[in-house]
Image (cartoon, rainbow, N blue to C red; front, side):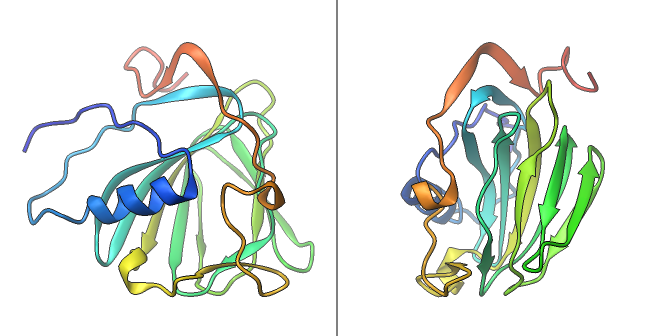
Length: 177
């Protein structure tokens, strides 16, 4: 029960789904690490733990990284900012700015998008959602037009991932800096 191995990110939407469902294959407590490699470009999503009713993921966005307006029709989820800052947008152009140690809850069906506003550091988010993929509609993530919006698509502002060489969030020397 004390294995806190460094998890690898799920780079594609398909990998996120597969990794998150695979994480449900345990009846034991799951210990996880928040260590993640930081980015010069793009975004990563790392499945940390999951049950059929709950998922926990670590998301990293390079400075300026963003996504497109979308809603999860079957999933409530929370974002907790661990590092950096972000601006969240609603469907009517309303905005809220958040910093590290703040969070936001997105009820299912709420259209939103966000972008990393930190200039010199990555945005690091803890994302907690309920329920997991097994209890969601096949096309749970929809764009404003009502059509599926795949998370790793061009329409969702996806860029190639470029890792910062040897720079990690969650290294004991880096925490709190």
